[in-house]
Image (cartoon, rainbow, N blue to C red; front, side):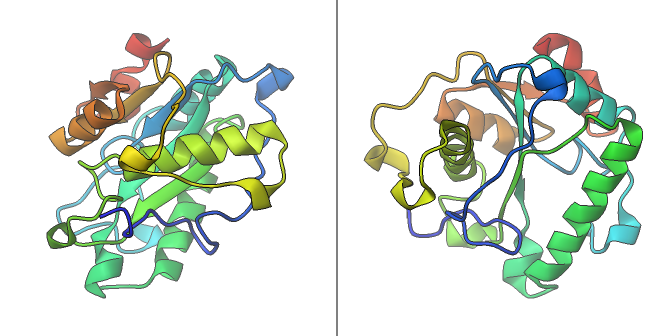
Length: 211
C-alpha cells in the first residue's frame, strides 16, 4: 500500500523544497494548515476542474491563507486528483491549474503563499496510501516541510509512511480543512484536528475556529 505515494507538480516527491519566509519573517511555530483544494480554496465541480480557465477561488481564500501564515503556520495543499490516473488529462495540466490557483490567491492577498502542493493521481479503486481518506499526503507534507525548515541536506531525507514512520512530531497545533468526510477521515488517521467547511464558502467558513 505504501508504494502508491503522493506526487508533486513537475518534480519528484523527495526533491528539495524551498519555502519562503513567513510574513515579517516571523518564526514558524511548527504547525501546518493541511488544506484540501476544491471546496476549500476554489469552487469544486462534479466534472472536475479541467483547466485554469475553470478556476474560481472562494471568498477571501487568499486572505485566509495570509492570516494563517501570519499566525506562524505553513500551508500544505493536499488534493485527490484522479483525472490524472484516469487519463483524462496529464500532470502538466494539473501543474498549470495549480500555478493559476496560486496567482489568484496572491491577487486576493500578497501574503497568500502556498508552501507545498501534493496530489494523489490515483483512482479510488487503487486504494492508494496517497489518496484521502488515507493519510499519505499529510505524512509526506509534514516530513517535507520539517526537512525544508531544518536546513539539512536533502540527500538525508528518508520519507516514511504508515507504520514505518516512528517518532512522529505532534500535530496538536495543526489542522486539516476539507469539505468531505474523506478529508476528516484522513485527519483522524493522521491524528490532526479536522474541520469540515461548507463547499460554497470554503476556508473562510472555519478560519475563526483555527485562529
